[in-house]
Image (cartoon, rainbow, N blue to C red; front, side, top):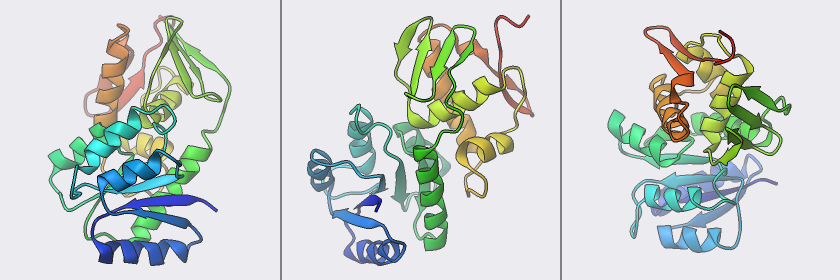
Length: 230
């Protein structure tokens, strides 16, 4: 049975989520504060975390930063739950390392669909053959990226995005296509999400001097350039 950690200080919302998710055969653990969640995570690792933005001690994004700094927990899928609906807040949540973002009040059926998609992605990346494009070498089986022969830390969503782009070097992909192939079909995610993760991927590649390999085609989408193709 898969375990979901619900980090939420509102007892009514916790009860609603617990009842709904137990009926869908998940094991539920709960934390009503950032510290309680941090203490639980120090002992165990869930399959997914539902994380409230506003907590009584420290914020959800602060807890998420701690998780992403932990090598064991950096790939655990996290859905941020928040009353903040502004685009800048959504971007801030994604940039912190959240895999998805839901604004309260949200549909439980939409939440269920997003949980299912994230769990499928976290347990199955698809083709596990090693891929090399120019100075990039990606090992999907071990989820490791090498640039110029040096191992580079990369977040789970950026890993999946780069994995897909590296499987089709030189091919142009629209934002909608990337959402379908990387995030999963039927997901209720804004196309702006793709731009956020492309920016994060470029920032990572820039550290090794290869940010220009991810090319923007204005009004059309993105593609990965192969330095050896031309």
